[in-house]
Image (tube, rainbow, N blue to C red; front, side, top):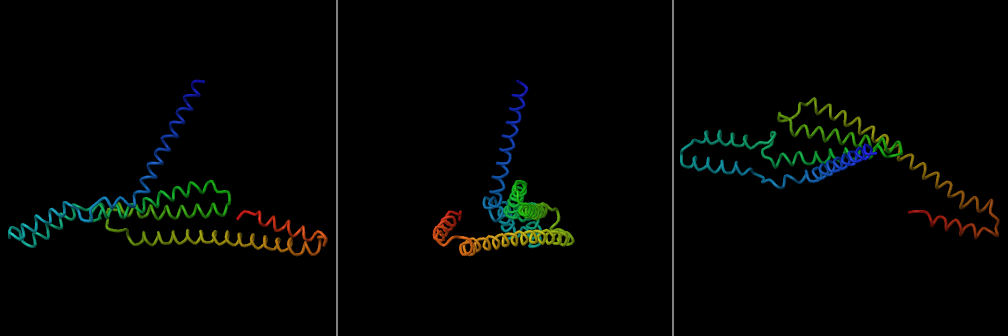
Length: 221
């Protein structure tokens, strides 16, 4: 009995830790697109360095060429993963981090969808969004200025294939809904029109019409 209690407590602790981790990730993902506003548009160290270099240049202590070299070096020191400053880095990374988290949530939710077509649509959407977000998250941390062109072409081809597949399932599901609506309308016309004229006694025709209207009014909207 004690061992069962210990296992239950460990499992409960594990669930709490997982829940806390998911909550932290969710808060970070929601706020990631806005983190860049906490940083200045121009790095403070770069402003100070520029002011010092301008003073030295005005005093003829350094030449224009030396100024340009030093200023370029100062700008490079302020760069974060190839971006001019940390504000631009978070501006580029934040949206993709948020999109990545939502794609994971959508993929998780797709496992609980019973309708097969809707399940496929949700899964493909989540996989597509996840691929795009991962692509640009890697791009943010990429050591070079940009990806090679063949990487872009490959990403475009994969995204086009997935989006086409998703549209195919969406159109199929939409046509299925239209078919259901057409069948419902056909059945309703039969019940309201043909049944009343062909199979309902004229003495009970009024009662039949009232009952049909009451049923229709009671349907959920």
